[in-house]
Length: 155
Length: 220
Image 1 (cartoon, rainbow over the protein chains, first blue to last red):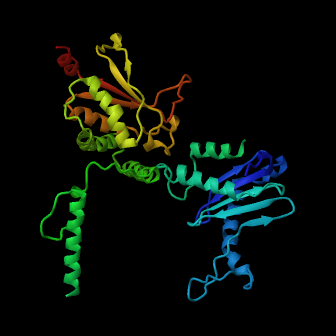
Image 2: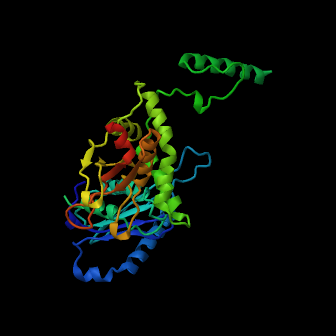
């Protein structure tokens, strides 16, 4: 759970509509790659991840899908995107009950990020949902939230 | 037939419950239990999340109004709550003596009202020396609250001229003091730290200026 700042690259929060609400770049990203990731690129990545998440149930072969035995018609449970592993990075995604997605991109050596994403969700529920100046589903411009998220990553 | 049996059973059960809890007995009819039947001496607590959501919604509601008087509206809302809170606090306090000294009412605020509203005590009252050059003759009193629950999750940015949401509590304090017979002015602010324009948020200061009449009647 104690993740080093060196290993984290990006942090995104994607709203239920697929729009990017919050993004954070960390200093461990090499400079040449940092320039390519401007705000437009991040927004398109966020919406692509939102769509991919939704498509996961269609891509999973039926034998692997767990059926929802509680319902009578055996509707398959919605499959969620949890981790994407590539040669250079690992992407972890945590989806809440409301459809909000917390996505973190880390290096391959980093430990499991799901507890960290849950902590971020708690911070969101406290400092963003209860903020009267924050309109729903808009980009987060809350200084307290920013400060607390940074504090999560610095030990 | 069944319905009337069920009805009469509920009637009996209602009456039994009322006797057990020592409330007022409502004779005969099957009246529903209202808020006036509930015992007054219970000390219910609600959780901070629910309260914060409600308060944030209130602030948002006043913000959306076109007259742009957010702080004044919050104060008015607090002022309408003050007398009712005062009555409740008085009933729960077992003493029946009326408070006549201004130091006593301030202690009542810190030791009784604050725990009633926020489940915690405010800091001990501090006095401000009157500034003779500005024409102040009498001491002002300050109540500090280091971490007030209503604004725990609300951010504050002085550059953005964010509103002082604690004016709501300032309105409550003012109307409690006036209802108890102590006319006064209450000013709410977040104290400034040594660096200019940086405020010690969420610490809140309530500066209470009693009317001249209060000091005059006590000095006799």
